[in-house]
Image 1: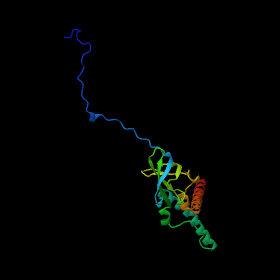
Image 2 (image 1 turned 180 degrees about the vertical axis):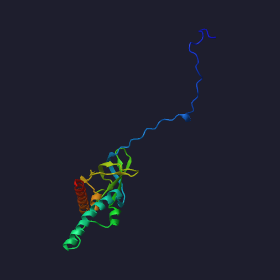
Image 3 (image 1 turned 90 degrees about the vertical axis):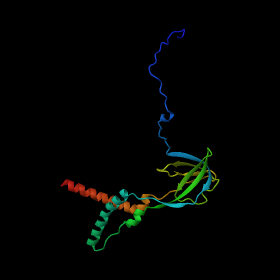
Length: 199
């Protein structure tokens, strides 16, 4: 026995050795910013290629159904007047389902932190507008999936030009006339529903 007497703290239980394999650190979800500023020098410009913009069926088919009612009404009026069917803005379904195609130009930019960043330019851009060794600045957005960043308006700091490439949209693909015809069809359906409800 020690000259200082027994230790005042009693042993409750033996310590258990913990295996390092049992220790798990909860992993937090990494928040990837949706937008970032890309400022640097172009080191490579790849060949532009076409990419098709899909038309969701949930948008296409209701639009076509709504546009069908004014077309049938125009057909009926044309037959009553003896002038034949009136004109229509509807195009073949196959061409509407295919979707518009837009140009994609991949760029590789050496950013300010000396890292390579792949940026896609969507829309038509002349070959002389963005050249290797040009310094650019753009606010790029990150699309869904594993696709590269998509450039917004590009400021070419070497030439002093501001580039605003524009790609095809669903509105330009469907056509303003077809959309207006579909809106007219929705108004006609709403008018019929209101008249039936008043009776």
